[in-house]
Structure formats: structure tokens, C-alpha cells
Length: 118
Length: 113
Image 1: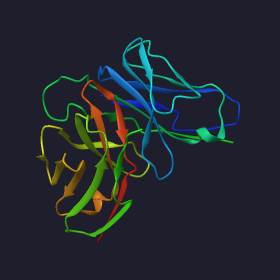
Image 2: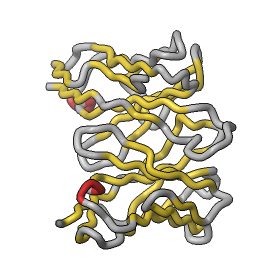
Image 3: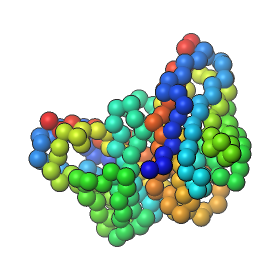
Image 4: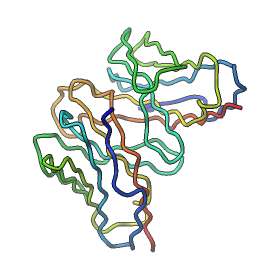
């Protein structure tokens, strides 16, 4: 299994440009999430999905859109990039709650996309 | 809003010593807590988790302690090695939504040879 993959690894945008960060997982996980990580800080939740066709907002959703048309893919769209969106973006996936066994609640993270908005 | 926080932003230890990383949380309704390790340039990786109805859980070289009375979580690493150098985050979750974690700010652990 490839796990969680993200593309691109690096991206530089100009203010006002739009782009889509791609995320895919091959573990058949129901839950997928997008986080941003600013320097020296923890991760903050942008949007999440509990299954195909279902998405919801996290802590910092403004300026971002998501959709979940398949179980595998969860793209994050920046509608009009701003310098405040300069950050590292992580996608994660996880099993649904209720499974037995250890480590059932862990999220599997991708390698991240480093985005700079000029 | 409620969030998970760590007591110290940095911790430096000698190789072979034991490390203790602390975390304070404020949401008494959280069902479980997870410790993640993040190496430079990578995404966080799961270390160990603990449910709210437990007070201790052990893994390989790691132990997590949960004190619900004072809302405190700790990660103990035995015989710390240079490969343990990383940023450590605690996160809290509700069991009804595994995809919605609240993370603390992290502790940077440096292991000196």
C-alpha cells in the first residue's frame, strides 16, 4: 500500500491565484482530513470528511473548499490564495470509530505540501 | 475554544536517559488521546493512544499516562536514542469522529549523544 499520498510537494503561488492540493489514500479509510501547520505550531483542522459525499468544516475553513466524490480522494481547493495561507498542508485518513484493537483511532498522514503565497 | 496544550516547547536529554513529555488538555469530554511523532520534513506518525477510561498504556519503550483529575497527559520514552529526536504532539478526539483531532503545539525533543 502507498498509504496517503499528496501532490505537489512544493508550490509557490501569487496572491489571488487558485489551485488544488491533491490527496489520495489506498487503505479504504472512511475518514479523511486536511490540516495546516504553521511554523512552530501544531496542526489545525481545515475540513474533514466522514465518507464519500460528506464533508464538514474544521477550525480554520475560510478560503478553502473540499469535496469527496470517492473514498480514495479528498482534494483541497484554494479559491483565491492569500499570504496568510502560506503553510504546510497535511492530509490524513483514518478508520471509522468502533473498530476493536489497539491504535484504532490513529490518523495516517501524508508527507505534506509546502505552500508559499507571495 | 478548547484545545490541547503542552507544558514545554523544548526538551533536551542525554542519550540513554528517560524522557517525559507533558500535555495539558481542557476538554473533559474527549474520549481518547494520541501521541504523534513528527520528524523534520515529514507528516506526524502515530506512537501510542489511550482511551479516557484508562490511566496507563505501555508500548515498546513508550508509556502514556492519563490523569483525568488534573487533565494531564504524559509520554515517557525509555532509554532515549538519537532517532527519538523530533517534535511530539498530543491530540485529543471524540470516538464519534476519528477524523477530527485537536492538536497541541508540540514539544521539540533533542537527544544529545
